Figure 1: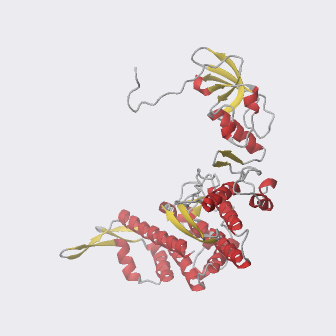
Figure 2: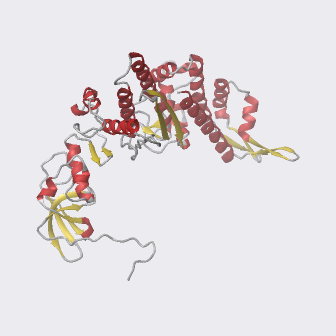
Figure 3: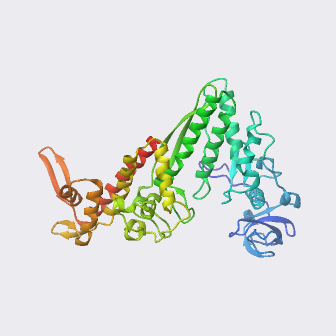
Length: 441
C-alpha cells in the first residue's frame, strides 16, 4: 500500500543484538557507548561501558531498561573508537556516531569539527586552548585558497569563504557566513573571531597604506562590540552575555580584496527585556552599567536594586558588563567611533529615564487613573533627565488622544492601560536609540 500524502516515511530500524556493542540513548546523557543485555522483541536493556574519562557524565556500568529499538544503535569497537575531523568521513552516519565523535573531541579540547563546508563549534568557555590562540592565526593566513593543513576553526570558514569570493569569475560573487545556534552556544564570540580573521586576511598583502586602512576598518568593527553588547545583550539562565537581537552584518571589500567597511542591520530586539526579566535573568546590560558607574549621580541614578526593571529577575551580578570599568569601556568605544561627549551623555539620559519611569505606578482616579503618590518622584526624575514638560508628560501617561474627523478625542486610561502605555513608551524609546547606535557605529 503506497504511503499517504504528507505521511512521514519511517527509517528502517534494526533490532538490538544481545551481547553486541552499541550506542544507546539513555535519556539523560543522550547516546552512551555500551552493550545490549537483553531484547524481548519490544524493549531492550543496555549497560554503559566503563567510564574512563572523569569528564564524561554517565556512570560506569549503569543499566537502562525499557529502550525502544530506535534508541539502540548496533555497532562495533571500530565505530566506538572513531575520531575524525570531518563528520562526513564517519564509517556510519547516525545521530549516535556523530555525537560520540563530537563528545570525544570536545573533552580533548578540540571544539571545532567539520561537516563538509559547515563548521560545528562547541563553546569551551575557555579562551586559552593552546591550538586556538591568536598566535596560531599566521598558520592559517599562510595557506592558499583553501585551508588544508590546519585543523578546523572559524578562521578556516572565514578563509575559505573569502577566497571563494575573490576567485569568483562571474556574478554573484558575494558570499555569506551564517552563525547560528542556541543561547550560550557562542555565536557572538564566533562572529568576532570571523571578523578579526577577515580583517587580518584582507591586509596580508598590498601597500602599507592599504594595509593600514584595512586594519583601521577591522579595528573599528571590533570596537563596536562593547556598545552593541551593552545595549543589545543580557544575562539569561544559560548565558551571561546573550544577544537578544538578530544581526546581519554586510562586510565590504574593494576589488583588491581589502576590507573597506561594514554595515549592521538589527532584527527583532527583545523589547520585553527592556522592562522586565525572568527569574535568574537580567534586563539589558546597559541599565546595570549605568547603575555601577562611579559618576551615576550625573544622571541622578542610584543602586540597581532601587529599580523594578533591574530587580525583576532577582539576579543583579554578572561576569560581564557589571563594573564602572566596563561603563568607561562602552563610552571609550563610542568616542572612538566618532560619537561626541555630549551625545554619549544623552545616550545615558535615555537609559536613566527608562529606569526611572518604569518605577512609576498608577492608582484609580474615577474612570481613569493618576500617578501614585509614592511614584511622583520617579516621574519628576524622568522629566528632569529627559528635559521635557512635566505637566504634558503626566497627561500623556494617563490619557490617550485619538484624532477623528470632528477633532481630537481624549480618552482616560485606567491603571492597567496606563502601565501598558508607560512600558510601550520606554520600549519604543530604547529600541529607537539602539537602532541609532547601530547606524552610528
